[in-house]
Image (cartoon, rainbow, N blue to C red; front, side):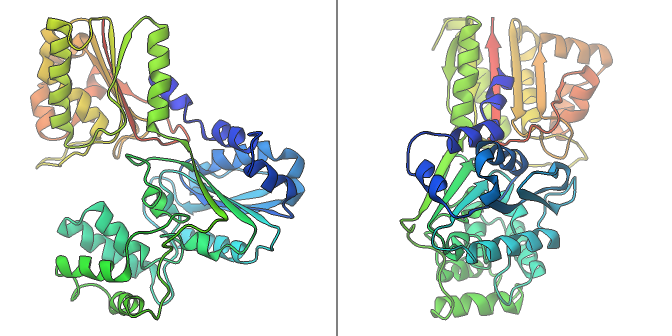
Length: 430
């Protein structure tokens, strides 16, 4: 069922389908384009670019472009260049990423009146597409980001500031485009699919302002700690001497969500029904502290087993979204998916896991700083752990779910999947 969810977010197939859709306006725009300029960034960027080339096979003499991807994703394509924007094993903006982003801005700024742009965006796109605004360095932006992280700013507050220090985010990529039409094809890794949040919205309207960004720094008393260039940039913008981020989407810019968590859950549900399960799909909006979510799901499992509410077994309980883990003292290793499985299994106990299997995995094949996508647990998991002398409560207390499941043999290791639509959790009750 998890495999079905991942397959439903296959970037190459999603892009190929979108570009061969027999309905206008995309079809007509591509058919009449003098040039097709391709840009983008994200963990799925390589597969999306391959899908674009596959769909545009007869038009490749008109296609050119560059897409920023992780170094491990780079491979030769016919017309689109995959640019290594960060080395393997890291997830931070790099000077190499800036080089690629600048080349994209130059390409779109040179578009002629009959040229069409394609922007391919997916999870990880924000870090893979760094382009500091004039007068701002990459180090300036990184310092501001570290300060905002440390003071507990929300993701929306951080994005507000970062967009106003960027030459590409907050719709600025779309502002650069001078051609006929720009189509942004998007695979969402964000709850609710907000266009201004996915990859920090390079082709989306931004509801925040320079004044809002300055207010965030003031709220957390950071104005004396951020680089002087940052304060200068925000002051110039608030005074109207630097153009604002995009506030209304131009008529020639189109954003299309191709894949998301909800679509993947529907695919998993279809597989479950094919196998004879009644499906309770709780949707893609699940957020919150992982252990609290696990407690809730353990309660639902108990209700199904004891009372047949809300469904009688056999049941497949599905959910998506993305939870968070608050790290505690200790030196554990794991991720939110592994922690969810361990916390749920511990809450149910060996007897409560009779005829129950729990899986949780990141659809990108990664879960925290580990080589696992997540984990799987059943009653046998706790039996093996007891035989090995492992105390699941102790592992959970130090956020060390990886070590626990490595010992029991229950890590979910898929390798990088080439896509990212958040997490998928599957609980089966026989």
